[in-house]
Image (spheres, rainbow, N blue to C red):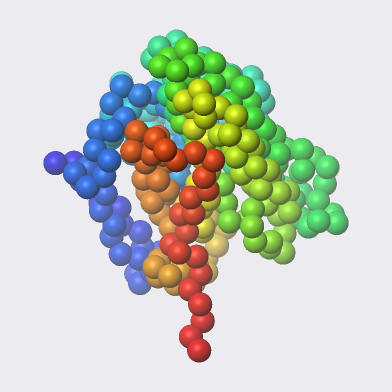
Length: 278
């Protein structure tokens, strides 16, 4: 039996251990499938890589952080190939698709996970043009370029596939900063809807996973322990989202179990914020 215990504890009282057991998931549902995952070196991307490989997939992992990416590839063994790729450019995205076809001979799943908040993304009145361009290139256009190159590869494989676009609650809820980030995620969700509607008849589904606050290396660097505990306590489940929570949703949308789900947005946010006591 495969069991991976993930313990998240920022100060001793935030979260409890969550176990992800192969026998209780969509076991081996991705045998023979090949997936491309962007932003794969750490956080949600790394958790997704581990989860898809656990379910039988082979993966092409794209990131700019070569050392961290290589550690993950070494961990996953022959099921994984790492590619240094800048997916804020079309050439970087194309290189990942080509690596899947040359390395594994097929492509079935595209997981558009890479995203970032770009310096200069301050507020609606002062965010720089460069911040807007760079944000949309990475958070939105990478998925557009991904579909452009992945769809022919998917059709040349078994004539079907799953495109999974990882979004954020920032697409729906404004904050005091990061307007380009929120707008780019809203655009990503709309693009996903159109892609699913236009490609569904060819057997290619396109769906969104909209995350709440996820406890990753990046968010640990952005917030202190008290803030992390507070964010987790505000959800209806009483804890923050873990990268593995998102990864399990990706595995579901990549698998045949989700074969009739298309053009959907699935919220992985612990039910959102719980209402205040009255």
